[in-house]
Length: 247
Figure 1 (cartoon, rainbow, N blue to C red):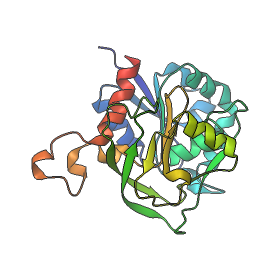
Figure 2: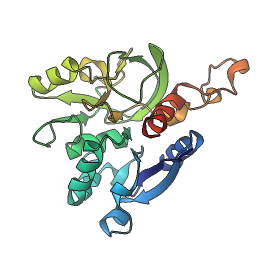
Figure 3: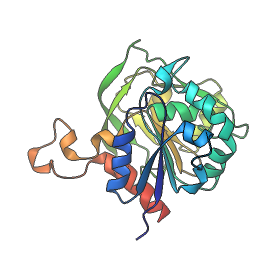
Figure 4: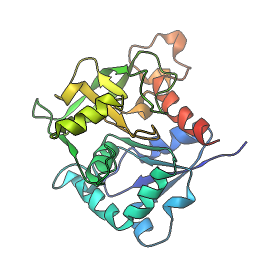
């Protein structure tokens, strides 16, 4: 069976890349860790891969704002990234990766390809690291959340996780298309409409603040019954869905 090639994009201070690569490898992909500078130098080509992931961390120290410098560096390769997404190849941005996708204008998808939303400082004013209860929007076209139960738990770890959209028309497009694939059951950061993750209209480009790679196996959850500790957990399904989609 084909092992899809997954590009796991890194930058200075990215720190969830190995876990993300391991998750894709476990479900049958062939992951490769690639620094953004390797793309800029022409050493690697985005369109040579079947899947793409922007993992969590603090790229470039979250200087200016989280994900902004990485997004600026990506601008030189905007055509390749847009072609990757337009071609229906799965893309996932986790935490800092979601911040990057938002600040490149790749999410929410819009005709102008401009940034129309952001992930702002948490309402509490400080970094949050905790388990979060999430509701899965069963009507969403998101390929990554297919088959998940109505409610799941994933860890969050961010200082700028408040999803906001200034233009009411953009927010209406998100909710009208059921692009808000994940919402918080108990909003930890003040996100508009409790939004924890959004996808493109095709459902193949997905950004979320919670970390599915950190609840990939049942033993990673502190309250999991001992009898279930050897099983896969909710996060597994996100990666499994992406690989199955491209096979």
